[in-house]
Length: 444
Image 1 (cartoon, rainbow, N blue to C red):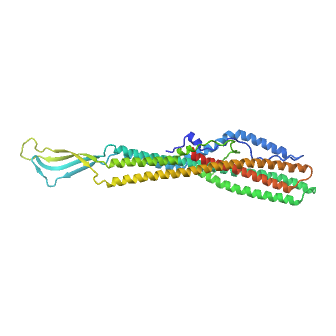
Image 2: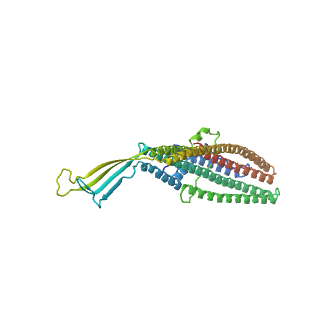
Image 3: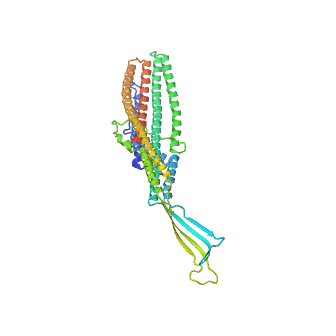
């Protein structure tokens, strides 16, 4: 009974990044006579190799999650069952009124020339006017089409929710990785500061400041871990599965070019198509009301059992009576149908106004999402430039260490700026794909 989205429609909801590359790696510190460069370089090469191997597999993660959510969703299943009920009502519409049967026994037997009447049996069937049953079926079918639109809407909304939760989870995981990398970098700086203290080239205050900064970053990371656990629980609920870790892509970037989009795509949105189907159902209801205001024809048969007259001999003695019946039901007082007709006209106007209002809301939401996605792209590009400049400043400061001069306060300031830029860049990536999920829901 469950219905899943077609593969080509399901792909419309996916927000798979166009490129995968490491954006959050901390550049190796250029320190002479240290092993930090070599170790960090080895980690970077290993990371890039793993990304290349896992790129194809990662691209399928979100698609698989969406399909699983749609297949397992109790909400979608409930709406599908509602649709099955409405669809079954089409068969219910293809019926005639109940056939009437009657039987009677003459307590006081009326005498006729051919004998006394003993009992009477009758049957009658009313027939609606020509085309009434077809009009009723058309009305029920249009209601079923409107109910099917609810299934499409529910699946699209669920796909959007899964997509947004996925990228929120990616942002939380990536921020934790960035904080961990910065903690390792600060630990290296702390070792440098300790060495500098031993040779009276730095104050113990510098070491304490570095340690305080590490404590703050550990706190940030632990808070993000708590947020990740809560979001993973929400994600598992969307998939309707037991609690288990959720895999996300290792690295996501923003496409170089903005995807093309035409505002006419909004006309095909299922929320608007549902109003079209409801409008058609009201129109079919008006046709049904017109058909029901016409006369109904009844066909029947009466049978009367006649007892033979004793001591008499003639040809029709005791002959039973068969009497075909024809009846017509005419709605002379038809104010009811006129009132229903007026009500349906008002409902059509109401649906037209509701559709126009909903279209305006969707249009505003789409334009807002497009603007916010552009803003996210601008923020991403800005943070990328800031990160590069912060890394250059960091390299300059570390060059000074070779001459024996290193201001650890400047190091802390640059590190804090670099961390801020990295976190803001991850936030820009998340916002970009959150808005893309909304745009896909509204336009595809």
